[in-house]
Structure formats: C-alpha cells, structure tokens
Image (cartoon, rainbow, N blue to C red; front, top):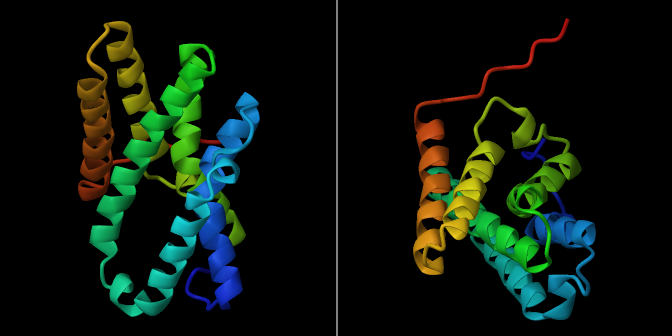
Length: 180
C-alpha cells in the first residue's frame, strides 16, 4: 500500500509518527515526562528537515533501497541502546530495559506500517526486533560486567547491525508459529 501517493500532510504525518513513535511509547510506558520530542523542539525541526529532503529528493531516494536499509539498521541499533540506557536511568529492571530498548527502535516503524496498511516488519518472516533484543541483552551483560560505556555501546550496536544485515543478506528468519 506504500506505493499509493499521499499528500504532503499525510506523508509528513506518517514520517513524524515514524520518527517519534517508538520513543514516545517507551516514555509513556515508563512514565517519563515531558516526552523527549516535546521537551526539545530540535526533534521537530529535524523531522521537518527530513520531510523536506524526502519531498525534493524522493526519486533519488527510491533508488537507494539498499543504502537506506543500512541506515535503518544503524538507526535501530542506536535507538535500541539509547532506549535501554534511558530505561535503566529510570530505575526499571534490566529485563524491562531490554524490552524498552527494542520498543524504542521498532515501534515507530510498526506504527508507520499500520498507518499505511502494511504488515509490520515484526510480523513478517524477518529478523528485526530479535536483533535489537540480542543487542540490548548484550549491552546489559556488558553493563553488569562494568565494560566501558563507549566500548559497550559500540559492541552492542555492532551485534545488532551484524545480525540484521546477515539476516537480510542470507534471508534468515525465525521459525514460524504454526496454528492448530
């Protein structure tokens, strides 16, 4: 359904929800207010810049599918770890922090897919959220072992990136859940 054309407002709204969706859901569930994007107007400006760039360069961007997938993968790695750290700062258990990290990374895309009537990546045979969860668990393990934050961030993010790119390249998927 993404092939259908949206007017500028619809596309902008979808982009906005995608950009802030995961972090907003995380913050609401953790009771962290004000929401990050409400507390810092620069998030809104960055989203507006992204929409403008996408509008004027949409044809060129459509030819960069593989490159955009790499940037998406770097983004989910970054947002997973930031989500884990924020949850830990708010005092939640490590298990919950791992889930909140994953939510931070993937829920914006889930909301986008729902808004555009697509099946969310989470429900397709693709390793996506699982890569985030693996990186979050590694981050928590290294955190408990008191590994330097920079090294931990780099290693945990790298694990997410490698799992995701490896899964895409070799079309790896988790086993399917069979009903009845």
